[in-house]
Length: 351
Image (cartoon, one colour):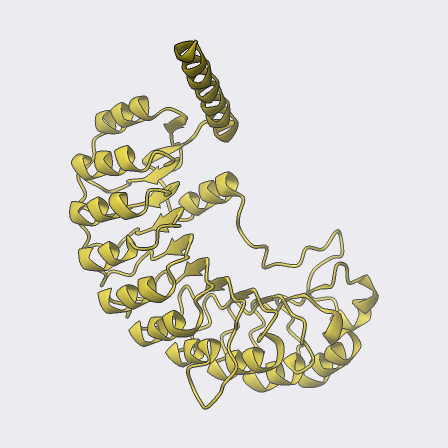
């Protein structure tokens, strides 16, 4: 049974809160088309340059001069030849940028993040995606947070940050984010395997407004680290898949502090038991997506849990449950009926 990515797809379908990092084109062919030849095709101030094999400094400068100040969203994903120097020459005119995607640009490093913070992100940048940028280190987080240098700018409005598979991000990077990026709502640091309990503890102190957190594959985080996350009371989605040190103690803390959880992945956590899962289900009444593939839970236990919860069905693509069709509408309808019934009972009692 394949489970990789299915939890995230179910979550996206249910919450519908994912930030669109990719500029969408309608029937324009592939990204091999020269972007300079289709400047007039830009819509909604979005620019898609993914997999542009002939990228060059001169071409990027021309784009910046022609459209830079009007652009709100730029995607440069998988531009293998993009370097820090090229990006710096491009971003110097992107002073109104809101969304920036540099995923899988394997040659860019911390200097690009520094440039983005300085030129195009101090007051406008809301989302930044750096998935698989293997040259990015914790220093990049320091530039984002304005923690490096004297009176350095910072990303004041940053709400969404994806650092997944940036393998040189460690606790120092999370400490920087906690210090200067307190507006974060979404953070993906999956497979950043140098991150430990210490970093997560600092993150929870400085970024307590987090709503979506992906820690998949961060296998040096202990129960103590998840306990610290319980102070993030706004969490609605938490991915702890493959965090192999975790036990039921972590779930007790989560259920007490993160009662708004709607999606939780515990895939591959062999120390989690039915008792821990039931505790979360009791305390987090809004839980709609649960992935317990590889946990010490029987199918009978899962079905019993589903029967007692309502609004959920057994998942088909992983071991766990997902919301029934129109679950949100059904819950709202039931809550409305309950309110009406209670109001009627109160009126009758007063007569």
